[in-house]
Length: 190
Image (cartoon, rainbow, N blue to C red; front, side):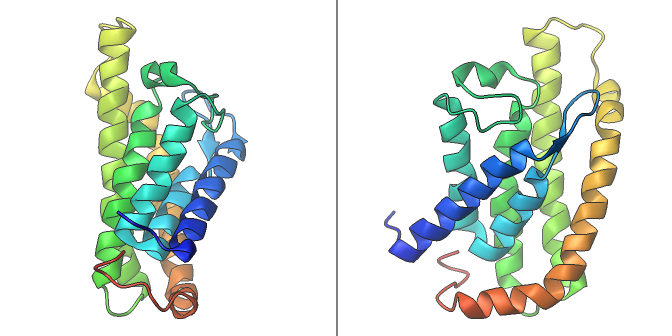
């Protein structure tokens, strides 16, 4: 998989934005509220499925190598953190958002929502499943169940749904300009 110089720069830009988004956070009981779901959505919509997923994967690999780019630090042991499933979800979420977004002819608010909501669902499915696994198996919390984890994540889900609605509306006017500035972006290349 060979990337052009422009693709490398754009991918690195979104990797850096994702790292910065982890540090813009509001403390919350279970996980801090960060800008990461917002950056993930933009990566998918602007870069497409391939480059969006690559930018999120590079971010993940940076964190796992010890660079403190995750909301609570970094390092290989982060795979045992309850939030790591969301980080994996960002890779899949960017790919899903990018794939659906790239086939939409016109980036209207409705079309943007059609790409954003499945991506958000993927992020939360992976994140919640991983969180439940870590809580039950690694942390040994026998009382943790799906309903408990869903209830704990409900404020984040509501926040991200509202955020993605705002992105969908704003993206209807902003995405055409961005896509015009990136004329070599095609659905096949992502």
